[in-house]
Image: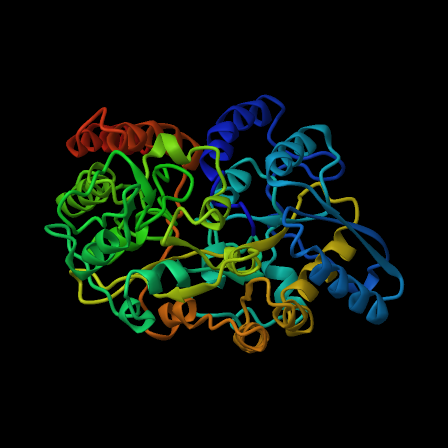
Length: 464
């Protein structure tokens, strides 16, 4: 999942134009796809043979899924899975162009922000009847993951492959140099009024070029050597998954009136705007870098340069941070907020079948294998992500523990049920097109947090 969320805004904005193109081309896929999104289709997997094309974007996961394909081949010698990996920049453009040209892959890794549009464009096969015929267990996943992939029509358009949460990565040396014990980072609290013990910690870990800390007299916020808290790739747009969603989520705020498939966003509520005002204040005080300073830069690269004492980021980045040379890294959970609980966005990927797939029997057989313990246990043992099936999640935890990495700060959100779902609604690309510049304007100081009310009105007008 590397780099996935960081560039999601640009992808969503681009998707709006691609959506119009698909509509102009009739909406359906190539080959024998047609309309209907696979409605009522029963695929006979017992006849599966031949080649199956499968796309994913994360190079770090490619070895694990190639191992899955090898095991699948042993059980299904007449089927040959051909895996293609594209970088995040190219993946969605090639996929959506493939829908139009009729040469998209049979199976592909899908994202929650994308599949509603794919369903409305009738690009995905509904899996329900095939899964029922094959006796596939759709209740074997971590709580809530499978339901995320059910469209508004009640049909299932993907099988979960993994999930992610957010935690704090910290530089152990910079924490030690500040006289802070690592245990002190495990139970921080925050509020939008004064930031609580969390902001006090951020301030103390911030150091200017003369060696003054953010909580000391004479601190110069214009000349920062180490930021107490880093910023992952800009404002975060309308999602803020790794930037601010853990704070809004622990401040009794929800993105929409219901999830999934809400029809009213809540960016105008005081709890949201107060949280964003506090978040921006960290930049104003010199404790966190500006949006301009971080846009286009990899957060792990800045962290590796010793510029951040802490940074919030997703579990898919675990290996990227812990593999940094010359940096000893630790993990801490997100802070407890006014709700009395910590919070993390709960996101997950799935595998979907293109409605124009040239080998639907082989595609369905492969998707069922990808969604099974046989594959997900392999992925878990390689410690790159948290697989969606609980037993495979445990294998991932054990594999990271064997590498002396304690991933409890991520999984505590699952154990304590402090997650909230990635918002799933129609008009995702249009919403991001409105919210990304609006959030950028607030965090760069060009507009007050109250300006988000007008952006929210524009968002809700999309739902008519």
